[in-house]
Image (tube, rainbow, N blue to C red):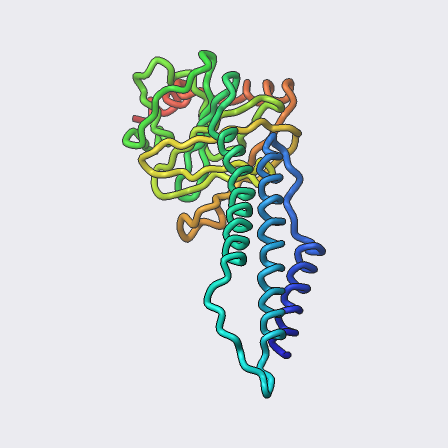
Length: 269
């Protein structure tokens, strides 16, 4: 009876903790409500299964407990129960997979009108690159990374000189504009994560990954690294500011291009 009581208390305590927990998501600031909805659907399905399984265990322990004068009857097969369990399991798995597949299709399908930015991660700093007046990002290569060229932009690429370089500063984004984020790491595995944006993606050395989102409210949001990238991992923080059009253009006009940065370091060589 003690084990039955413990199992029942586990069910009640778990449900109460999740219903009255003070921890929840930060208010969303992007178009990815679908991700929240998918998590909630998965939470309810797994929660119901958890309650059902633990409650069934408690019932079985109580119902088939040892009692003097009683002997268990051996029944090796129950086709009806097996089909019911197989069917309900398949239905539950399908209910969890379907919303995720729908969201993943949206996640990898970038809108044709999306702008582009690049995020470059290194221990333990975030760098950013935006297209210049030509609207195109120049080519970059980790082998070209140096103290003067921390993002490894290819100097002789005609699309590169007007790229806007933000080394370790704040990244500003335009409210309501879809953004494709190109992700690159120059050392180890990182993960660019803004909790309010929900969407995120690993940054893998030697590869360029991506995700996209649309900022839906103005504000200042903290950037975190969601992968354990070394001893300085907790300090790998950054800032993203979502602006209205006028504030964004004013900030953009103050930034330096790749050609301006290169011109500033030339005399030192």
